Amino acid sequence: MATTLLNTVTGIDSNQEDEWGRSPLDYAALDDKPDAFMFFLDCCDVRHRSSRNGFTVLHWAALHGCTNVVDAILGIPEFTDLIDVTDSSGCTALMVAAQWRRDEVVKRLIGVSDVDYQSTEGNKRWTALHYAIAGPDPAKRETRISRQQALRTVRALLAAPDIKIQLKGEDGKEPISLAGSLPRVRNELLSH
Image 1 (spheres, one colour):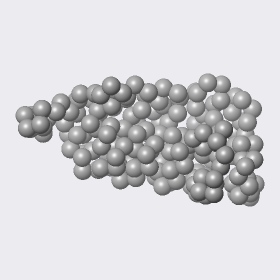
Image 2: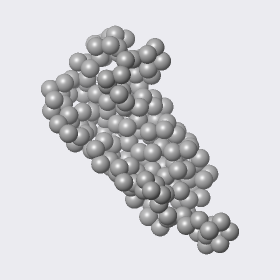
Image 3: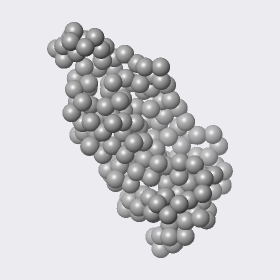
Image 4: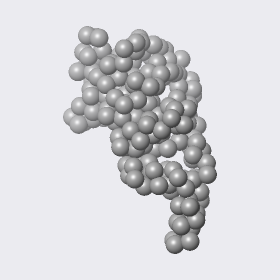
């Protein structure tokens, strides 16, 4: 019914993708609009599809720190299989949230996601903890705000009961080895 109404009134096809492979459902997820998300969820034929970069709606919500949509997704039983789905670079939604230092999303995902899962990206095989410390651009200089975001995200990850903080990636790096410019994060890891 909603699909017919949407198409008749606006001419919008709820399953139509744009040039980046994103659907209206993806945009509702990345814009933290739970009402629009639920509306498009009712309209879309393919709920578990991913965009060209392999992002599911949970990846989009995690990337943009959209806690309301993450909560909505986690509350829908048929979406539980999205939790540990990897994107085209081998990262789960938890890793994406950690890398972009979305601590509130991380807090929501640590209870349902595998915090020690190692990505299949290149030769890294990093965990969410590696990504949280490295941040979105490891070559970029850390600012006061980015250091605070890193600390909050690392603390959120360390709240996971069985997190293995000394897991090495295939590149031989442990999370603590990435914390050179983050002394408070390094201290947090040492005291864990």
